[in-house]
Amino acid sequence: MTKEKKEFPWPTVGGYNLYDVMSALQKSIRRGLEDDALFWGTELFLSEYPDQAWNRLLIISSEDVGLADPSLSARIKALHDFYVHDRKSGEARLFFIHAILTLVRAPKSRLVDHATVVYFSGPRERREMPDYALYQHTPTGKTLGRGYEHFFDVGTILVNETGEDIYRERAKAILLKKDQ
Image 1 (cartoon, rainbow, N blue to C red):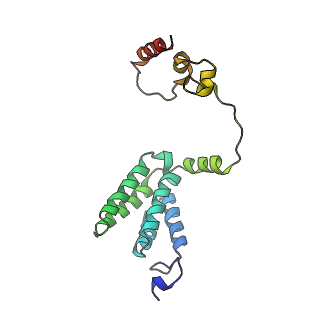
Image 2 (cartoon, rainbow, N blue to C red):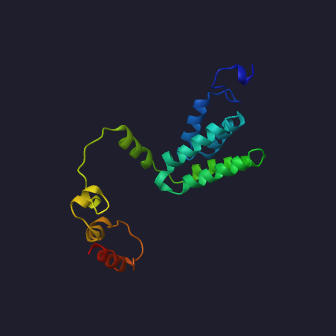
Image 3 (cartoon, one colour):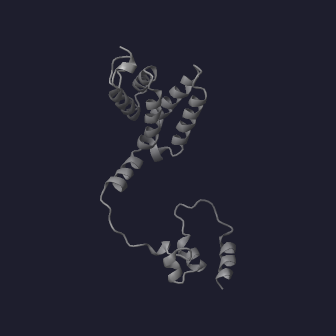
């Protein structure tokens, strides 16, 4: 029977369930099992499920790698874009394999996924508005009479700042004149 006459999801070329194969691909990537990840990935691809496979690879880039390699999602998206551009070519498969190998060998972190669960699925707490958020461009900050001095002294504090900001004091002086 042809795919069109069967109910979705159709079995893969090896007779596997589509969702089981996608799970095997992701778990293999998580564990760094390169040969297994390549097998399950190509099982999806050869079964005419490349869109589902690419969608899973893009999710894996945030869910399982995330901040361990912050630019990886952009690289996987770029590989997908190259694949789409060359889709009609047999060479497009290179980008698919490249993406799987990149994900398998990448450092891993589940921080993004866990934070997503906490802040989208967990209970919402009520918080007080922090003072640093209330500056001259917010309605409450205007009510409090906040100006650029508060903005520079409280609102522009950076954590993990890199490099020396040689313009900060000059910018502050210019903007403080506007408050007068």
